[in-house]
Length: 559
Image (tube, rainbow, N blue to C red; front, side, top):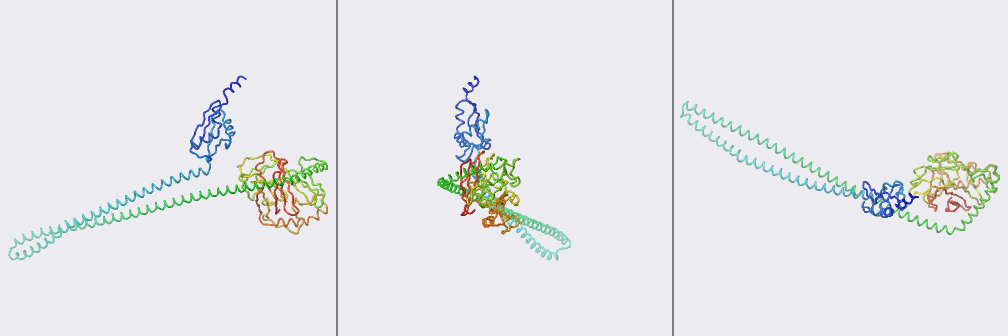
């Protein structure tokens, strides 16, 4: 008692509350005891406001999640704190998918804008550099040409003119020499010959000099032409590089526009989904209003069920062995009824989907498929299980109904809105459904996302039945061991109606219509009863009761 009183004085030990968002951490409150820490950590709104403030998030764009799931109420926050003990309670802030995508799109848009700016700056810089290089090359070429022209004017032309003058002088000297030959002796001739050789060597040297100058000019000209061609090639490469960069920019801009268009289409689809949900809610409200007007009919059905229970207790005395199941054998006696039909007592061991497991006594069936958790309906046998015989029939001539019950023993959590289980009736037996290649059948089901299903079996690659063969009936319509002559005679008329209602078709069909039973509201331990009654004027009525309370009645006008 002393330890308990001291613990009550100190108050409960509250762990430190830490919010995480990606790689960011934020401590909302520290660990401690007393009323102040408890008051701080119990406020779910304060946790949300702290997440908005420190992680820069908008209200309604994120959820608080711990290791056990989403935190929606203060009780969930208290559960997270209690499971954390005296240590540190970590709560993850998960932003909604559409807002994360918007944030990623903004970051991608910003990166694309910065990339465009850098590319434009680089293009501008390359353009300036190219213009500068071209101007420099042009100036260098112009200067070189001017230097060559200046060299030609200054060096070559005077040299050539000088050579011409020398040639003229030489010719003059030759003429003078010829005139003087007559006057000079041999010695003077030898002297003149020596002078002539000197002049000849000077002319040869001048010619070699002219040839060297011509060779230099040719080499310089070739080098200038090569430089010009290289500059032109560099200019073409630069033009191609700039054109490629422009194409990349145009492609990036088109990709960004497509991404933005896809995002707009997704937003429109979300708006359409919201409108559809609003219309469904209005329709459910109308059906609920209409169900109030049918209270008297519900009371009549309750009276009929009470009569059925009383008759069931009377019929139970005709059997030596008592079964725990309500379904025994048909004992009624009226025209067109088949007495002696054995009702089902458990599930069929092979007429089921690949994901369904049965208990040893075949009284419990468990489906563990993955498609059902998404709320998507398709022509699949996933989650299918069928009883091993017909359900209980009761009534009299011209007015009869079929009834069965099952209990929900296990449930698996699924996202809200995907719907619950489907339950109903088929006119084929378990053996016939198991023999069909696709496990198809003719029947009526209720459940799911407040829907009703009308199922029609196809041939599935099998041969079509003989329409005139009145003995080839579904097993649920077959006469029992104690059938009367009148019952056998009524088969022909009933078979004609059956063939008209269920014509042969090559492919199975599953048609979905709106209903009023929300099966995802069921809880473990609920007992669900299904009753099907065919009307004389056509159509059928399927009624659902949960724990002896009628919750839905659906009319099939074209049954």
